[in-house]
Length: 356
Image (tube, rainbow, N blue to C red; front, side, top):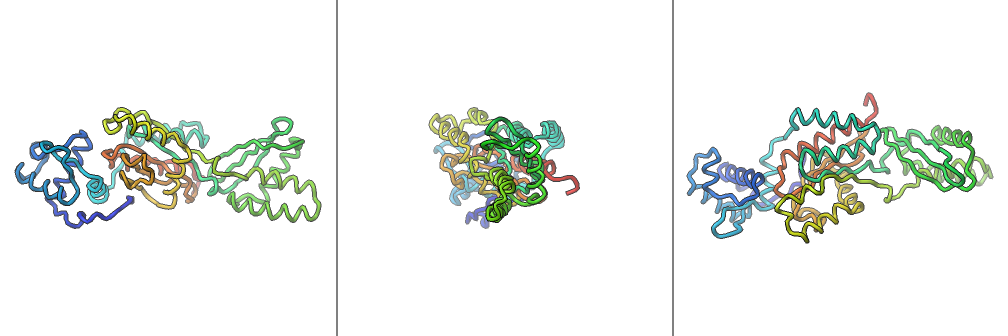
């Protein structure tokens, strides 16, 4: 399990006493959202330190940039740098509780078997158990390995192309085809394209089809060229075909961090912008393990008051997409990390071919 590490200078300077006080302040701030005072720590935490000693440690942590004091008479709150230290150094590898794991397994297994339903249910489970926003980036179409192609005649001028990947992902698209072939010929075309090009990635299949089309045009084989042209249209995907599933955005309305209406509107605009979310989650496709992006580490300005916890999922050892949770900077990171880690493992297993 990995995180999006930075290297605050304070990390190497924390002795066990400073680390214990910082851990307790972060833990209590996550629970309450309040500034935490020395008397609260002395009363609730098992420490062999007086309130005066804790105040001294807190002052030193403030000097290191790990705590801030919102008001002169208030306690301290952790800075983003403190949350980074907390995530990188103070969280043991978390695990989802057995009851939650079983509930997630049942929900995903009962999602109907289609990949779209499976991914939608995964985003709902992330939101349900985190009480934050659940995100799932659908499989990157460019990474799919094509198992077979089928064509169904709909009406005059339209044919449905059904692409089935080895991982079980099914993608349908409507093609405009003047004078479409009869069903028997469409079935033959599908078998031919599957036999010739099955096992290729989409980019590889596009290249092979373009090359073969050029060759067939040179020989004036109209029937073969027609088959290849249908195949070319079937695999001619673009960025607009990408999909992301979002669940639980309304959960953020109950948090004090988003009580400012302008801030809430900006955040909701981002969560409703499919292209922006796809770009955000796609950046994580090359990084294995759990990633934690805190506050201003986010590339999107409208997410600077949020944190993102995410992990990739696979099909037959190939990275397909991303699952993630978006919430306030004071989110319970251990729980969020455990959830995305578990969801990515379950999705990877369900999307992989039997025996792999």
